[in-house]
Length: 195
Figure 1 (tube, one colour):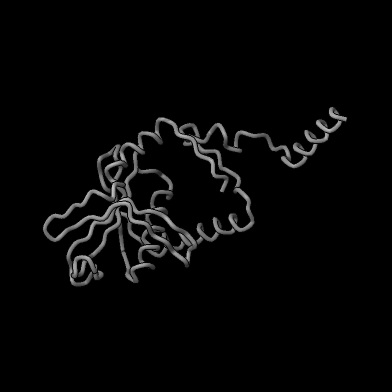
Figure 2: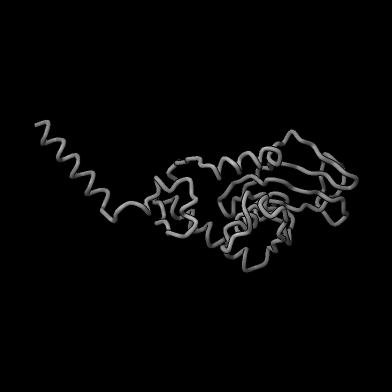
């Protein structure tokens, strides 16, 4: 919402690790499997858009029809992360939101996907159950409400804040002073100085 971004060593490392994964020019096929990279998705229902890192398509009559291949394939969404599995749901929510958008676009249903963590060099299977889907819907509804009213939600201070690239510009580090009053007072002082 605030259009703010800063890199740090962790975000830069993540970018470097994603270079191959996110390159849509890399075409990969093996037997009955082909891979699509950097796939844009949108959900009108959730009012979100995003990019899926990688989709693995396996030839299967119960899958979706892929026009370019003139055949049916089962898709599996795979999201790549620099670190290791987190305690929270943030990675799973992101993957499930991508799945919901893909399902809406392709008129299909996905029951699971994977998150590949570079640090552990492993895939973690994520089931898109009712509870996770409900969490995605609740969070996107809340996010869209904040966007509509033009308000940034209050940040929560957690242990992971110390590794965040935005820690220097995050409002969790600011005082609880009213910004409007502060700016008004500053402008008033400037006017008096110029008077």
